[in-house]
Structures are given as C-alpha cells and as structure tokens.
Image 1: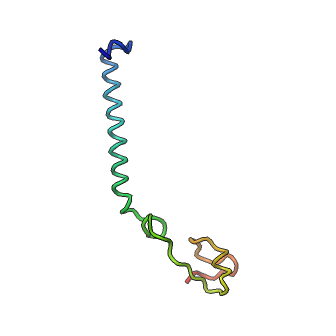
Image 2: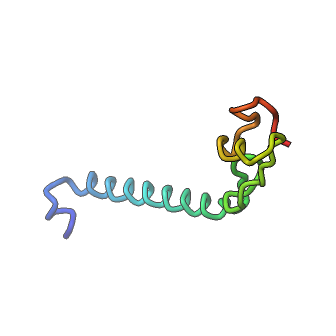
Image 3: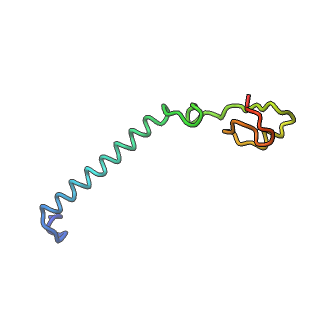
Length: 84
C-alpha cells in the first residue's frame, strides 16, 4: 500500500528502502565499532584519550618556562632548553 501511495513504481521504492536500510546499518555498525575501540586507542604522546597529560618539568627555574610553554612542547620557548 505504501508503494502505490508514494507515486513511484513499486520496484524503485523497494530498492530505495533497501538502500536506505543498508546505509543505516553500515553507519550504525561503524559507530558501534568506533565506540568499542575508543578506549583502546592511544591519543597524543602514547597515552589513552582519557589519561591526564604527563607532568612537564623544565630545566630552567622559577616556573617561568612552564607557564610559557604548551604541554606538548619539546623545547622551551624562552631559553631553548629541552624538557626533562
């Protein structure tokens, strides 16, 4: 009944419904796969997505370098020394 009420031929409407079901199934399974592997993935720096970033210690003193550098920096922007 739905096929004839839509105004299209029954074969094309059925084909569209099957294609829509395949499309939705694919994206549902894809989303479930990514949610199941999310906890196993490693984020930046080899840590999991929910771990805290590592503590950054700079060789130069006073805490100025720690405040001036982003967490992922390898070298100090102020003095050029490497992170320890």
